Length: 201
Image (cartoon, rainbow, N blue to C red; front, side, top):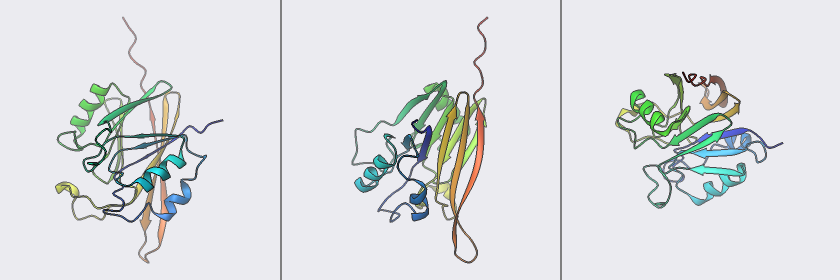
């Protein structure tokens, strides 16, 4: 049986801002475990593209604000998983960037249950008006040039999603460094249940 797991990552910036996907993440992203990869832009290099093609048989990529060498990439896409519609975009076209109301408008325009977006390099997940919003952060921990990024060092992160019927289970993987400089992968789980559409009257 093919895997239902969906890998969501973005803002890699290899080699411009980061040398590679962290080794501890690469160990987790072995071929055969993941059915689909969604990349939210700023992929930047062919080697990482080839690696992502090996991780999952199905790869979807949207254009990030620094993907200048790939003019044919779409700014947004929608994929269907059973009853659940997943929309994704890099996020630089959502104004104001990362604004909850602007993202809600984008989700409604795309007619999706879940909106995946990037651009902030910081993991975020929340539910608003029955829709689920996920930003996987930067899989490499690449720094952000956004004025709202603050002084925080980005924490490398990516997400795996499992969609079963009207339920999406999100697993967030973050590479944390302890006080002694040791890196450990922390995993959190978040669930979302799609609301049934209102009955026709």
